[in-house]
Length: 120
Image (cartoon, rainbow, N blue to C red; front, side):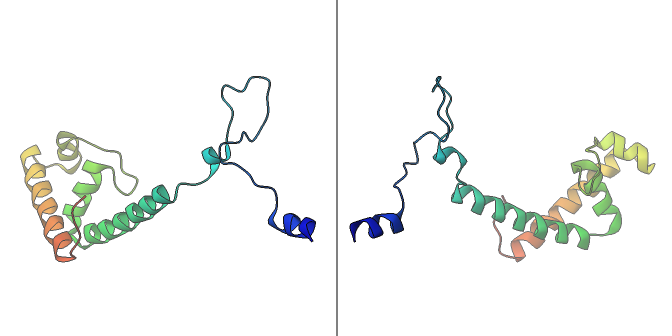
């Protein structure tokens, strides 16, 4: 009876026990090293959710505002660019890019707060 009970439960395993045994145990990998960290997974999911919501808010902006934010911050596959680079590409002044960017970011903040989400 004892053997059946032990077999069903399996062999106890320590999280600190090395997964591989080598002559040199200085850098061995343990089970604790390879198990996913639930807190990190939850944070990752939360960050993805926030990113999706932010993308939706950016899409709701006027087209030029959204484009300037994409160019400035490297969204939608764009390369991050300075205000001067954005101005040159769009044929407008750097100060105008700055004003549009500031207005768009403020609009995002307002919309974000209306959704009841804390700004990260």
